[in-house]
Image 1: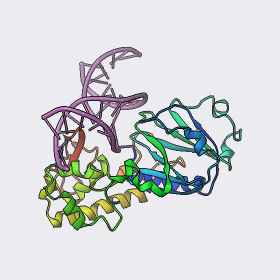
Image 2: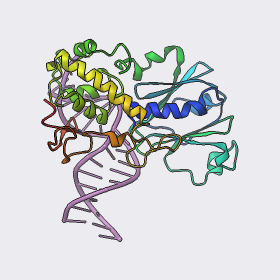
Image 3: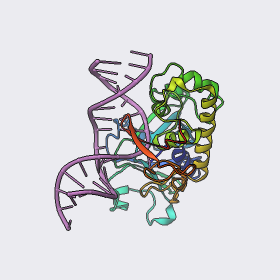
Image 4: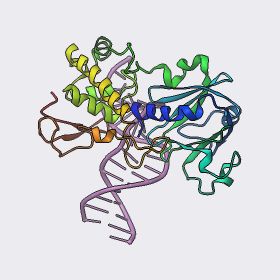
Length: 286
DNA sequence: CTTGGGTCCTGTGCGC
DNA sequence: TGCGCACAGGACCCAA
């Protein structure tokens, strides 16, 4: 579900319920997600005020007043569900007692002093959480090797050209490599390549400066539009506030194998690159 | 160093 | 209806 636009959408939904709030209660319902949770995870969250909620690539970062940052990655199927106090009977208490119908994959639950509950639900459990000193957060092993944010000045035609220079891998795989640019996933890599007119199997190092210029612009435009639409909703995914993102209707090639290209009418094709589906127009992309 | 493939986990949708 | 298989928005780890 979550690439950069979806994580940004989740962040925006969580800011009003978490920022400035104290985590009155935290509950950890299993010992591990993708990796073991840090020692005393729930206790370390409890009593902390969330100073700021930000996003780096596909990671949510909640800076706590005790000096640690709560780091959250949604993986493939992770969701942050918000339940407001007025929509439930009980106040702060034992989650299982309050919610006999707690979902199987509700792994972490926090309740703020305002009575709002935030539930991390993740069936596939590819998601992850950690606690890390805020003043060293950029050195976190998961963040240290990330490439530039797509909207930052550090991401530019020149920097992309330099990052791709000499690489023998397909450009599609390079866009999924978070060290090249942070935040793209399978959907938006396909969409950006289509919009830039670049064939997904092109060798990274073969792209011209002009093509890199188009790619930078189209990556930004695609992500921009997706964020404005509240992200993409596949399956029954919903934003934290229960709203559905609508950008899946804006996909031009992703998931459209066999359909006509929206630009030229040529049938869109699907290939597999490094184990992931790639959708593209064989005529528009060269 | 780069690159490609396997892997973690659960759920869903499709063809038979 | 039931069953098996392919596939799903991520990214780490390791062999070559």
